[in-house]
Length: 221
Image 1 (tube, rainbow, N blue to C red):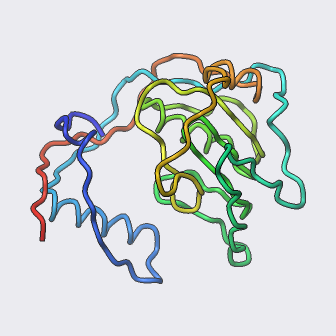
Image 2: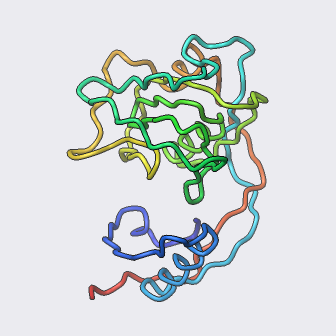
Image 3: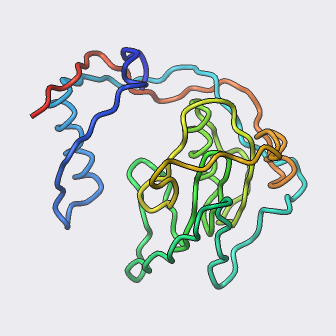
């Protein structure tokens, strides 16, 4: 989302909404759009812009914390002071778990995403690119050419910025916010290279963006 007022990056609102149990993802997206238009007076357009991006690439050497998933879910490695998450319930037969506006996960294994610590199981590397995009506030494109799903652990010291909280279906955050990363953890670029055998390359690419034409803060009801 681009061209919006500055408060969009700092203001927080509590929105309560109810979605029918049988609603499809497309229906949920339509409902969300209607809510934003009604409560936030939001008007947007979509266009493509040439923007700075990062390309997530392989270094050519496999990292020691990037594994092929096994038949059983590998236990996640939570950061110090955080208990392991409970195993998620298995999805219906043949189903693929989907999170709104995120890559399809699949696999049914637990994952954790905290500031400075990612522990993911049986996921595509496009999910790593997505989480890095959120953290870096710049689109990260998966150019690893590593197809399929992977287990990975990544521990790093992030640049100063807002804490990243886990999403529905991806376990992270919690009461009191995420734990502080270890002072001994390497910078992100070093961690990606040494732990996963990956790197980020600065580039530019045409990116589909949502342009904010009009928006206003809602009044409480």
